[in-house]
Length: 147
Image (cartoon, rainbow, N blue to C red; front, top):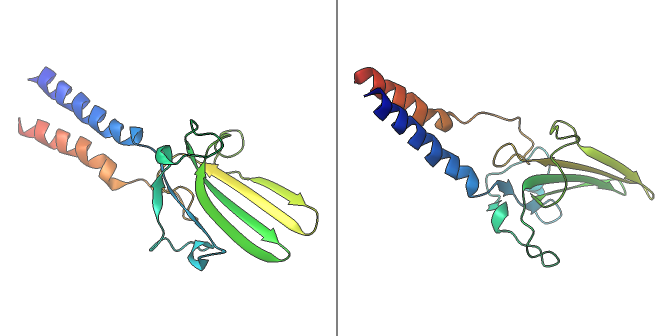
């Protein structure tokens, strides 16, 4: 009976890990065309895309592995871009809490933030753990008590 339960647990874990194989979902927008893309981010009408499905014309075999948020100040006006990222690493030194900042000539400031810890991580909100991810494990332990 215990080995049957263990097999069931492993099966659930494999099924739920396949979710991440489908790809990372990221917000895609730019504040130049939609003010809801700015901070604070209003994602009620924004699309999310599966970054593994997005292709670049210049590198057709490259797939998106991260979400990206770019905050840019050009001549005193802020612009925000959210999309999939194809190259690099999340954050600085694989630490998503830090963004790459660049200041250029002609009063231009740019901040690049990349992440891959969860779907929609390129929003402005803090990270949260999905309660849905705990549901299968909780259900399995409940049924084990009944057996």
